[in-house]
View 1 (spheres, helix red, strand yellow):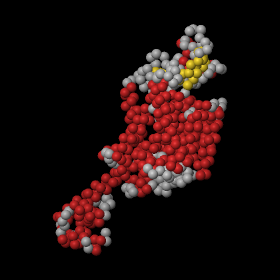
View 2: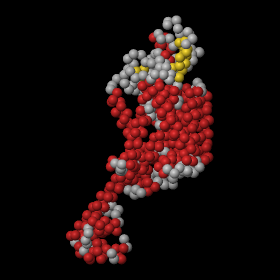
View 3: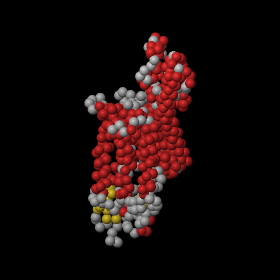
Length: 507
């Protein structure tokens, strides 16, 4: 009806130009009116749709024309997910070490200011921040005709894909002992990496769960009232295909968010009383980085994420930023005073490797980079960021503080990656182990050949010649003798008597 006018008291600011209207925004369907009311080329009720021939994009609220096959993007994103898992394994970036907790906390907090950060931080820094939160970081149209409904469903796909990869690795390494996963560091780090991924994707999945549950009310001048999904105003709320989104959101909430929240809040108490060994080990992964009695701090930080996410929806930007500023300040003061994390005096994993190459690489890290040092620094950079957001009308100060905060944060992240790479990267260890095994085999062959060709020279001379021929490889005389004795069933009686004598026992 041309005489009927639709209006609503709330529309997403990234969709609607609601500053043109002091009270709500009219939602007439004419194209001319849509151009005035909607931003980023959007049209329709609550500006939740794209014009014909255009599609919704990831990483932006704009409507764009899609180009390129969707399966190529799917392959690229699949490779990126696999690469992320590999990096966590190789660098041992897990919650068990504790150093990654501050990195994810900063990324989750600042990403709530994504619109602000995109404006003052610049597109490049915004893209990096999005990647740290499992976002795209730039405009990406997945396929032609994608709308907000499809986009909301796809938000759950990437985290689910990461969990499937990790579950396959855990099952293959621990239950079926698949050959591809027999590398020691894979089996040892599989569960910690899974726990880390659950923590890293928590905010991302929580945001994806909230989106389908948001709604708005559309009023009509003829007295009718309709409740619709906020992201796409032409979809009735809790009806039709919107029920699919609701069921998906509730499933992730009941089977992922609630259990993980409960575990992180009360897991430090549960692990003292649980009788299930596997569950106890799983809890130890989350709380292994904390001192006794400070495991609650992990749950508190998770609870703060939930509170902050709710405040983001319910409060104004200035009030929200003020609250964040004070919360971060209290967290930093607590960590500086209480020092809740365990500080390992040395890296047991690193001490096992005596390779000269590895020792040179790790020589610069005599002082451990530990969470008690990294977390307060990362919290301080987040405080600087929120302070910049509070500077109304001071554009230069906002630009400087925002970029300074994030560049300091990136520097700390790079330092952390370098530290973990030098401490935990397994390739030098594997090369060193293979090298020692190869050297031992060469020494053993040379020793056996010497004994066979010149049995009169005696075992001591043969040992000395073998070690002189291959001095780079560290193999003890006794080990060489024992290995040779196991393979060679018979030695000459003279050599056997000599081996069992007191002279040989000195080795």
